[in-house]
Image (cartoon, rainbow, N blue to C red):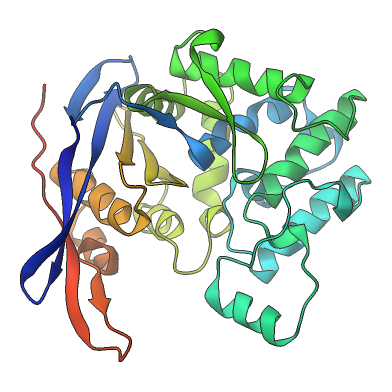
Length: 330
């Protein structure tokens, strides 16, 4: 059963509740803590991106096309669509000799509000470059181009690029390929359906650095946090504040994952059942705090996520979101 993880308060009264599931594993695959149902299955969504890049790195595609770490980071990103994100994606396409119209992720307005407003006011072209997944798609196309595989069908589950990615997901999650459900993500790429506890294992393995390429991906993320999300985004801020100890990656529909380096590497996976993003940031920060993985000074720098304020249309504070759980070690 899902557990109440966060409360939404309005004028000192509970207005809404966010229920969900939390799983925490170490690098050996041992489950340390679970809240709700850790076997609850859901789509990992964009939290899969640190693993979707691995065939590219394994095959030396990055070296062949001379991709920079900053460009690799945008392949892992759910980016804001800010100018520096777009420049990195354009560089990826230029280096691989591909045109923008090869991207099959489609257009959505930039996630960064000021950028979206500017583009709207300027009546800017609706390009897939600003899609938060454009980096990932550029990376998939680069792998296909490198191997001489078809470019038109790079998003089909049976395409060699997607088969290679499924192998990576299987290895890190410790699940057989035929036990991983395949759906279609918001960007039209294949997306993976698996238990929350296996998502935690994936991020614990990423942090432990014992499986090939995991250390490389971790380093790319923590040294380029602004590329992974962007201005005023939780993932970027958490990685900046913790200075190399953690990777953080959001997935749509209330999914959020964190990998923590240390003597005992940890993976934390969260699913808010109603798909709320507003609760997931508060919940994840509280998990890190209760596990003593983050200091008071670091929490202070992330205070906007600890108990985020809710305001009405006049800008008047009417309430807040607060965590509502206590972790108990199994």
